[in-house]
Image (cartoon, rainbow, N blue to C red; front, side, top):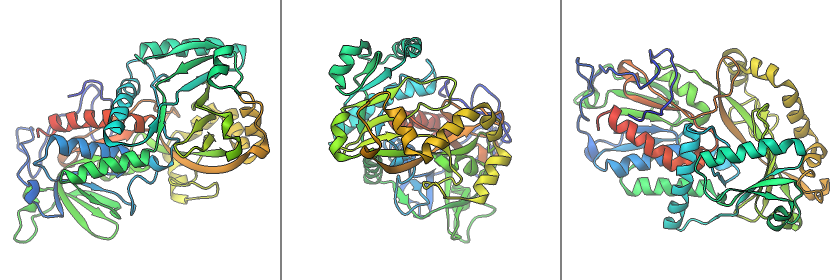
Length: 463
């Protein structure tokens, strides 16, 4: 079992320190230990799988790939509610391959980001996927930011990030001729890539190895089979029934959920705790007009302020040559609300009643108001951007795309900063592994996360 895995006490009866033991189900034994897989393999019908992954984003697809490459004799399926794969968080992010500098030393984010970035570069080279190792500058533009910058540099060294160096004004100009700053951290191993292209490559690997992908399959219920289908032993071999909104169902032995914006609801469907709750934050990007893209060569980031929950607006080159400016961070009123006026009464009530959003808002009121103001008025955002590149004007930018971040929030109003994985007890809980909180840098870390999940699945389910 991976000792670093975090999970929370909840309705499934877990205790801190390791995944809860115990197992009693249609394929289990009274001794509380799961037996090996009850057959199935490639001879199983298309509606039955040994393992099902819920969620066709980059983490789900990487995990499916890792599992089938490690266990080629098993039948493994991916369920995705959309008609296409990787269209939400994977398809709406900035495309940055992060170095791992921001994250608390020894945290899962720090370990998996550093490891995952190296694996991702290697994978892209093997598959011929285009990427650019364009580097990143984290720039202090005010004297008061320099101590925080130096502390961040020390954190990066603790996290084992290669090539970091502190540079002064003259070296900032060599890297970014139009950028002003007093001091910066140079992160040469930061890069950019099209993460949806990477995710689709994972899906191709998975399918070529014999895996199955079912799209347009929105999970509505997860339950134990009440009885075997007529003249079938599927109920004995595949005791978990997953139903979709169309009334269709598939059966399986074990489930891994990578449901992103719906991770809390999918956990609740399986009889496990919905906590930590997911609160959606929309991030709006601006675009630098093509004729002004010469102003930015690599990633330019501000020095993060620990008083506030997000990194702040930054400059990000894209694989297509465009430059994204952003994102801000404002509450989304719909879990997939990419437009400012997208609204879901169910999602809003869920956020207000069941999460710690009110406490978060009270603790960060001025920050939230500032973010809303910048979202409404381009001039406010441009004024902030001019701290780094004074030549940028309002006429140089256009409104661009948006993404929605699935951020886990505890009931005390604290953002859950690290990756969270958990499981439960009982007939279903003992057969499920949930990826509960995997925001940025999950895309960078996807191959490292998938290896960790494959390790845990193998041990927990005794594959």
